[in-house]
Length: 196
Image (cartoon, rainbow, N blue to C red; front, side, top):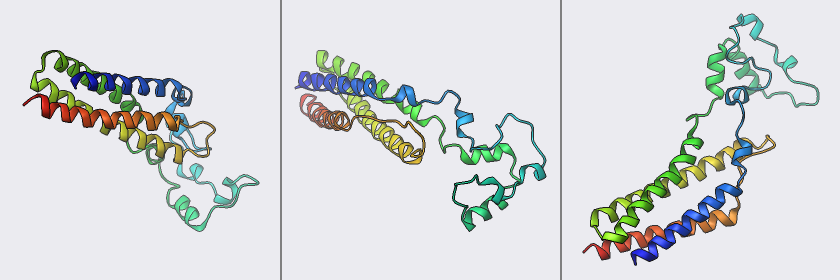
């Protein structure tokens, strides 16, 4: 049964690798993240601090022709935030956890490969601790994968106005997720049955 889990784990890893290769993550990454995070018309964070009078522009002049005028709530927010320094403006528009997607993009496959190594060791020697370490790592891998999927889904929703956003094949996501679910279930069952 440990060999079946090993083969299934390899299949899941292969599906995940193919999912990464066929996605557009490499093309979506911006060249300069701070410049992309700044709102249009705002000064970069490295520019010198301007006087508050120079930063405060009337809302009516800030909207280009053809764009709908801002709501009263947006106008009040613009008046309230007009004296904010550029660093505070950049911090307000930055993501809550910067670089979370890149961290998950590394941590999810890394923990899966390390767990696969522990499971391979368990397959050869049937040492109980290796099975439970591998199971813990595969459970961590699932949590990281679900978090990564959620982060990409939210990023795609927030960046609907941009041309490119992270995209993955839905069929491959379902295949990878199903294989991972079966792998976790069989790894737990095998660790419980074969270690007693």
